[in-house]
Every structure is written in structure tokens, then in C-alpha cells.
Image (cartoon, rainbow, N blue to C red; front, side):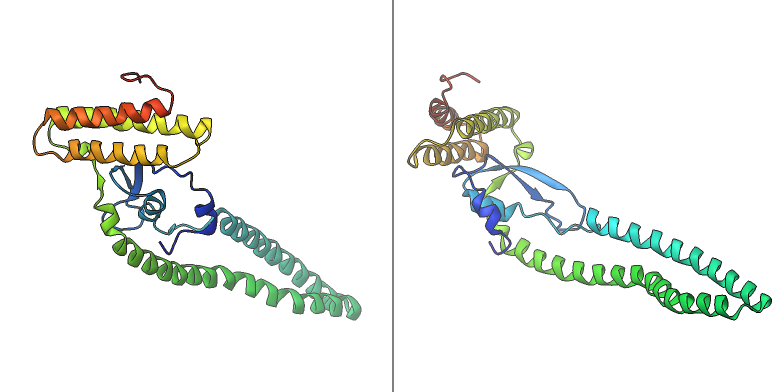
Length: 238
């Protein structure tokens, strides 16, 4: 749970999510995500399991800063070339005052240009170093949260076609009902959260069943319809 921020905790709705989008099981940067069915995680646990890997690319603010520095380096180099030309002309014309002025400005400008030229390499090394530290910490949490991931179901991997299709239909129905309840405002008490958790458990039992047990299917459908009534949906409706 270590990566859950205070803001994320404040944004919790009180209802567990139906689907949880988790990082690819390889844990590699940029490997994508998988949308799995929640079968027993609380909202906070789902948030922990869904923590994305650190972004391998610089943020927009970092890219914007790099662009500004690059433009500044170009302008500084051009200005330095112009000042060097002015200094040479002043020396040839014997204008000691103008030559001293140009030399003074160059003495200030050249170190700045050198710093600007070295800054991108320094920030790149710093970004890579920080990213490695962030990714190592994330991998440790990723491994630690693996038991949470084991409580999620990949609906597309359900072998029986009827179980797979019906599980997807019931899960989508639960997801829509959950959104409807949140849009209406959470009722007082724990009834919606308890009913949703029960419905997810029933759908999970149906999805994980080794064969198409009609009793498990009926129990899952009844649990889904029961939660739908809380959302204002008529039994059997979608």
C-alpha cells in the first residue's frame, strides 16, 4: 500500500471497482496493462494492485524546460559569435572601449553557454539514476502486491465460451450499475459495498468453476440483479 497517496485515498468512492487495470505481469517498463475482473479486492487494495510502473519518459514540464534551455543555448551561441566579431572589429579599429565591452560580455556569456551545453547531459544522467531508483522501489511493491493480483480474473482467459461470455456480460452490468450508484450519490450504510462485494464473489465463483455449473450461474446472476436493484435497475435489465 506504500505507493497510495493521500489524494488517492481521498478519492476513494466506497465501492470496490469491478475491473482493475494492472501492469503487465512481466513488470517491464512500457509493457502495457491488463484489464482484469476484481473478485475480492477492496477499493484501496485494487488501487495498490493497479499502481503503474514509473514513466520511462520525461514529463511535459521536463521536456518544456529542456526545449527552453536548448533555445537559450542556441541564442547564446549566436550572441557569442556576434560579440566575438564585434571584438575583432574593435581591435582592428583600435577602439579599446568597445573591445573591452565586448570582452566583458563574452566573459559572462561564455560560461553560461558552457553550462547550458552541459546541463542536458547532466539532467539525462540524473533522470536515468532517479528512474532506476523509482523502478526498483516499484518492482518491490509490484512483487509484494502479487497476492492481490492473484485475486483478479482474466475474463478473456476463461476456457469455456459460455462462461467467458456470461462472465463478461455480468461484469459489465455490475460496472454500469456501480457507475449509476456513484452518479446518484452513495446511499448511507455499507449495503451497496457489501452487495457489490458479494456479487463479485459470485461472479468469480462462476468464472473459476471447472465446468458450467447451472447453480453457480444462477447464484451469480441473482447477485448481479440484487446489486442492480440498488442502482435502480430492474432484474434482468441492462
